[in-house]
Length: 344
Image (cartoon, rainbow, N blue to C red; front, side):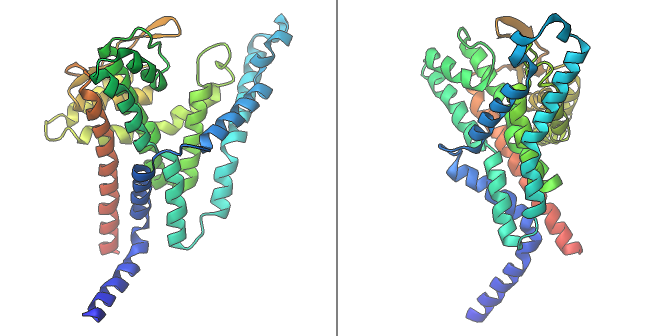
């Protein structure tokens, strides 16, 4: 009996390297579930500090008072865009290049542990749940003041006068869009380019959140950050749309979700965000989008999804859509690796 168990164990150990990708993603998701986001010394805090310092040095807008009228125009715009591109390269590229050349040739089990740690640091499924519940719980308790406060953590729009329905909408939109940005995209880019590409996407997405504003300070300097984040999110956004849409297969909404993503998402202010939100909202049989107040200005956007308006009860459902998408992707990876194993 002991010899039989030993043989089974030996065969299992032999099989593990063939399923290293699945094991890596599974371990990363488990680390996120049970450890959550780092409470202290989070790497993005340090990265944000460094980005702010570099932007202060390189962004021409920071020296606006020193500039004369002659420094405005196409030449100044080009200079700001080039400096913004240089800043992006200096901040984003060194770490993944070091990782690629120095840390991608380890023994398979050490590579799994290292790659899983990188993915764990990049994803935020546990964090999404915590932020959503910070809004959901006070809304359930009819504490609108606290709910508005925590909604402000999720969105850049003015939350001071939002109604319960508007806060629910803002939270769900954030969950579905950030479900792509901070969960699905990292998992997908690991499959495409390994941990170095995960690092590039995570840092680029962070810079877009810091510099991707269309205002006088960042319109030119943040141009490269915004465009490169859109480019990096294009493939993963479409894949995330499919992972959301698949969940509507039982209700016969998978085609409708994809059609809405294409029609509505292409009209939304954020192409990638519009696609994933439209697909997620359709699967939930809810409507998102509409008007919102940003920095004192009302911005009207296309309606996303179809069905009734969202309510507070739909916030946990949006989290479920993101969680299911990550599990569907994990299952697909396992199936593909099983097929490859038995074929080859």
